[in-house]
Length: 438
Image (cartoon, rainbow, N blue to C red; front, side, top):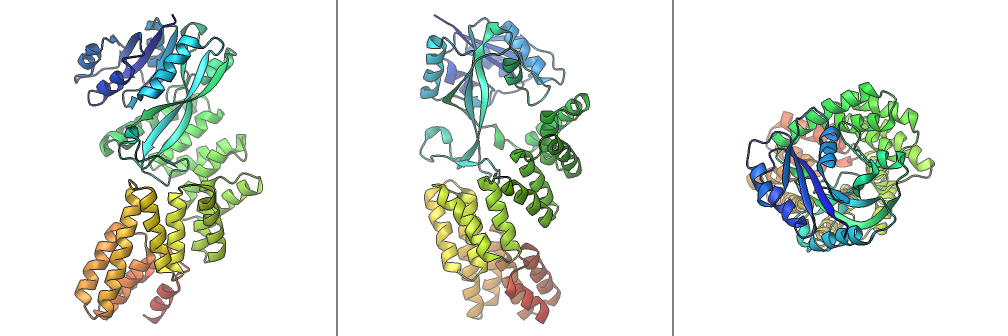
């Protein structure tokens, strides 16, 4: 019978390694772990599961480390996992079925489900809250990757960071099969300090990779995304534009560039990038959402409604589009409609914290407005401040605070509130009129 080796590289993964290894214990004939310098219980945990641990000196090169585990493995098939990943029983069995029965393919594409709650990420997809492997997450970023491949075909990982084996498989004309098999990945929402360290390391390696291959599309793309993640927006934009010069109309790169421009408040420039995509027949849902938000920012409520509504109509659950449409309705005075949209979303996606916070903020804002109308200014102030803590992007809360502060004689603070409201929503007529009157 064919054999399967699970190969991994690790460093200080004691908190999650056992779960990963337990998930493959029933299907792996061998586990080979390359340790790059752990000083916690990682090695001891690996050995408890019968893993063969080899020392791999760290050279700032993920591919080099992974290729050491390939050389050490003996299985007919190799499955690459990371310590913060796991298989469920169904997907583990499906992998074993491929190992035991596949006769033609030399590499198999699996889907990595990167669990996170960032609905603003353009590939974010809602997940079934009842599935035990989702573990409280509202969604994930699914990415197809070659993670299962034959050992004796000479395949090797390439690139020091964002390493992949696909280029090697293609260069050797290996036959690739696709599958519906999923790997569950829980490392996207690690501690902020750990996430920052990892991001800075990846940026350093991405810069080195770009320096070695200045005209390589993937190297430029990786640098653009990593620089943006680290707040280096000028560097990200330069890399992104260089990559787009090589691949005009690339959806992912155009999305990255539009995000960079939006973060710098270059609204019209971001709009132009996305409209170019649309004219070229490429209008992914995320681009439609952003164009809808920009339309609302410009005061074109009809366009905003149409774009956001089209996304919602096309998807069973569309959290970001729904929250944006609720904002549009709110700004047009249809506050009850907005609240019902958010409430319906919380029923469809109960694990989505952003929706729950928006609903609470909406209810607190309404209660604050009622308290103000009843003449209870102190209670109104308390409620509006609580609402703002939950949803600082709501221009209506800022406007309400401005009105309240003005009645309390806080003229300068009222002006600040109206100006913040207009920065968030330049088309918000009440805030514009209130500032003018002030």
